[in-house]
Image (cartoon, rainbow, N blue to C red; front, side, top):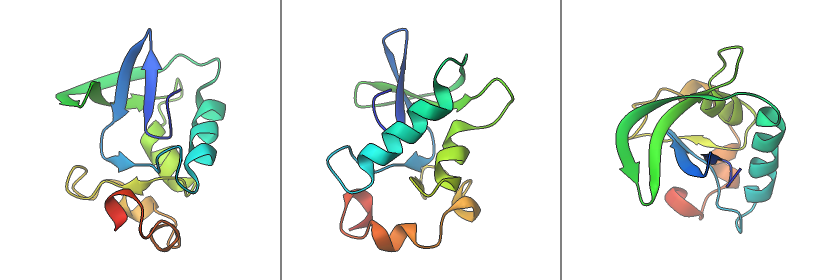
Length: 110
């Protein structure tokens, strides 16, 4: 696990499409990462790549064995936000109403 919106599978970094989690050095960054570790630990993750890249990462939607979208799960947990332009609002209805207020001033939420 890299952080709340990036995982590594066989040393390949995968950036979750359509969500944005705080960086590790920002408030809730570590909590977001560890929530993702808890969701993924010991599970086989399926990735559907978009064909895009973000810095040194491939971009895709990641799924748990039961079909749950990891991006949706971390947004529902209140530890990431809908990516707006990149998600076209896919996760907006799942956001914790307080999360944007909490993260004001960090990352994309400035």
